[in-house]
Amino acid sequence: MVHSLYGSLYADLRPKPLALIRERGIPVYDSLERAVRCLQALADFGEARKRPLPDATNPKTVRSRQFEEVIATCRKEMRSVVLEHEARQALEDAGVEMLAPALVATTLGEAEQAFEKLGSVPVAIKVVSRDIIHKTDAGGVKLNLSTPAAVRRAFADIVENGQAYAMSHAGHAADIAGLLVTPMAPKGGIEVIIGVVRDPSYGPVLMFGLGGVLVEVLKDVVFRSLPLTEADARSMLGEIRAAQILEGVRGAQPTDKDALVRLILGISSLCVAFPEIAELDLNPVLAYPKGVGILDARILLESRSTAASSSH
Image (cartoon, rainbow, N blue to C red; front, side, top):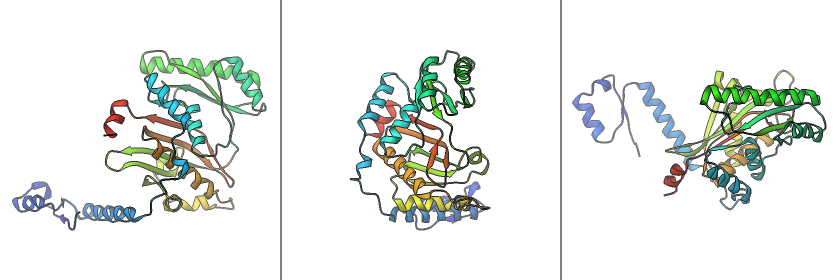
C-alpha cells in the first residue's frame, strides 16, 4: 500500500537522493499534476474496493449450455470471433432484452423468406463472417430495404463487397457464414456504447458512454471493474459528462434508465460467467424512452493459450 509519494522536477535526472527514495518504495513523479492524478486514482480504487459485490449465487451468472457449445464450435473452427447471431443468443441467455429478432440467411432465397417472416417491414442486412469484424468498412451493411427486389440486390452486393474486402485486406476469400436480416430500429433514441475488456491487472472492466461516432470524438466514457451491482450500473449512467442527455433535453423524453441498467448488469453477468470472453462490444445501443435496441454486437474470445494460463 502506498502511504506517500513524491514529486520532483529532477525526477528525470535520477539524482542519488531520489534514487534512495525510490528504493524505499516511495513513487517519484516528474510533475505535481501527475502525482495528484495518481493519488486520485488510488482514492477511487479504495472506494471501489469498499463497494458491495453482487450475490455470487445469482442464477444469471450461471454458464448457459448454448454459449458453451458456441465456444466449443469456435475452438473447433479455430476462430476467436463469435459470429453476431451467436453473440445475440448469448446476450439473450444472460437476460438481455433484444428489441427485435434477427434471422440468418445463407442463400438469396432464405434472405427473401426472412424478409417475409419479419413482416415485410424495412430491414437491415449485415454480413456474418469471421473474416469481417468492421462490417460497415467492408460494405457489409445495407439499410432500409423494403422490397424483395431490394433484399436480393443487397444480398448480392454484400457478398461481393465482403469477398473484395477480404481479398484486399487479408489476401484470401472471406468465410461468409450468411447474412443477418433484422428489422430496422425505430427512429430516435440516444446512441450509447457498452464494452468489456480484460485488463491484465484488474480483470474484466466494463465501459459505458455515448456511442456511435461520438465515442471516438468526445471520449465521454466511464469504467468499472466486474462484477457490478445495480448501484454501480446506475452510478455509471450519471458519471458521463453528457449525463443530462439521458435525462432528456429540449423537450425530449428521458431515456429508459432501468432498461440500460438491466443491460449493463446482463453484460456483467455474462462476462463473469464466461472468462473466455476477451472483448465484448455493443455499439451502438439505442436508448429509447421505453427499452433499448442493440444495433451491433461483437464478442471476441481469448486464445486457448491465454485462457489456459489465466486459469492457473
